[in-house]
Length: 253
Ligand code: MG
Ligand code: MG
Picture (cartoon, rainbow, N blue to C red):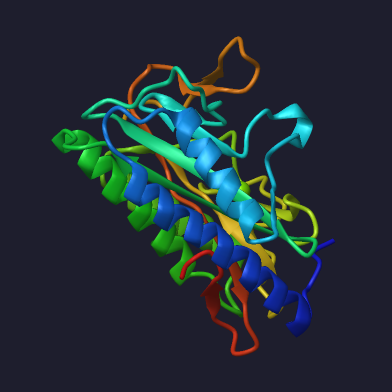
């Protein structure tokens, strides 16, 4: 069942989203060659707690940190570490979640560390662009399958591939609610013909690979990497379908 939110709940989710957006602003200003992902994690957790919120990820199924930090060929769920130093030319996908008065905000962005290569730049643009293509389809009257198709088309037109194993999701009191939203078209997707309605809140989060869409899980039990070890990027926003039927991005200032 998809849980529709009241105006009051949307107000709380807007606040949760704002805190997450603030964390990204802060991370942007701290990101440079030499910084460790452990340091970014510490700063993010500090800011989330200073706002009276709680990091969504810490302790989630045993995850040990407040943010996920996935470098280069790492797709998602990378564990930050005090020995994981970012280098000039790296890309790092950071995923942040915060719980404010019981409601989650969830967002991700891939950052360039210093100057990056042409292919990495194109990958970041394609991934962020794909997220916004999906958001443009998120309105009352459309189906979830319209979002999936728009994201896939945008990515594949640029010669990249969409990760299949990780999907967008409803969000609210729980970080992962129904529906599951694919970022590619699958004929057996049970939600592809479901229509969007006002009061729905969900996160879209395409992960885009330079090479194959296939991924592998590393031995730490968390870090997901591309099977061919080529680069991957990840952009995510939490959205609400408002009364006027359009998508409002909650995780942005
Ligand atoms: Mg996320
Ligand atoms: Mg998410």
